[in-house]
Length: 367
Ligand code: ATP
Image (cartoon, rainbow, N blue to C red; front, side, top):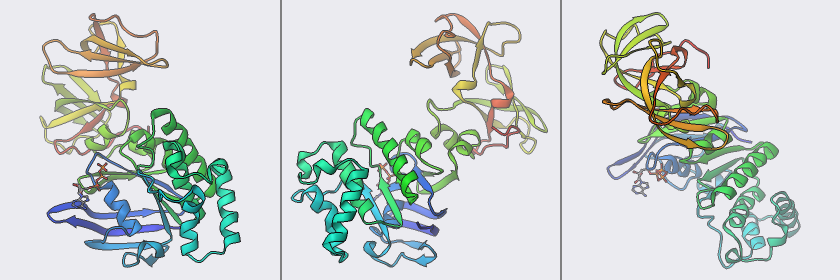
């Protein structure tokens, strides 16, 4: 098991700052996911740790040993790629054995490690096949097996499930989670899929434009996003956002006014902002409460669309004559009639508030 620390890590490709001054520690045995939109620098950061790219600035340490000047093979890491990267002319067995032979391990020890790993991954019957004789899911398992037999201190996964169909992706995701439980190794996993990150990680690093936006465990990121970008990226369907102005602020409560004049409250501290500041109010779909229209209803909206997904339904709410739109997550059977007016309440304790720069104002509730 290994601990990884990055200090001031940057990578420049010509004029592109792919990774900017990243400070990060991944503790021993942690499952850390790098997430963010396409081009945010996730893969580059992983490749810097693997030694497949040179740093432009900064330091990388594994177990307090500085490794950024070392070749990949000397870092004690093993990488699993989206493209599997198996040798096409070698059998599964030979693919798994290759790195161990290069490292000078004896035939008996190689055989023992491959047999144990093949059993763990249920690929014993595939050992004599060539990669082209395997399905995508089987190839990915072999690629993972090839990493496991090396017994690395750190596993690095670069979008390993992207080439698999939805059902296989879910199954393989569970297998990777089990593998982590079983091996207890430090794992770093790149994905653009926030669901994958939420279900696998104990630490998530959200990246944007080469910079770290927030680091935290999945529930902290979900309930206490540091800014509007993280709030919109983590959670599916995403958090609803409403543009507003700050009307008044007392400790633990802010009064906000929408463009159409409605007043909403958020359980946050906003006294540091000048009155009438532009703010964005955020609320997750599961906290949007639909009821009868009336004087205490909050917002008067219309149910425009309903998606029934089995265990829950998503209702799109619109406000005629304004661009305010909200998605509400409701229990099946509680869907409102379409194209009828409804009253919509946004409970203050579940509302987030972001200033004009997107920074979150601190909330009063713990979840
Ligand atoms: P994706 O999810 O699409 O794979 P990513 O978050 O992994 O994206 P990176 O592949 O790390 O992003 O790329 C980060 C930035 O660096 C992008 O702007 C990309 O175009 C640029 N980049 C990556 N590799 C190179 C390279 N070898 N030469 C020049 N620019 C590069």
